Image (cartoon, rainbow, N blue to C red; front, side, top):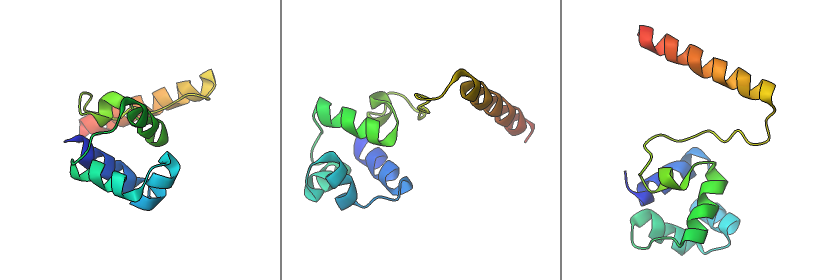
Length: 97
């Protein structure tokens, strides 16, 4: 998937319009549209801002990393442990099917 498609997918999953995303990024709606259509590429600063908004890595946005990551910053060790256990249980469940 290319950057524009990934951006659009993340935006729609977050329930944001192009205008709402543009306001959060301090750019115009047309620039968001250009990104999604592949007519423009974001600067490194804008790419970093997009990654922060959607809690994904820049590598994911650029298609280098194929799966999104989960931002666990701000969680304590106990919360992180619970998340790891949930992930392992889901993996085991999915292997059975």
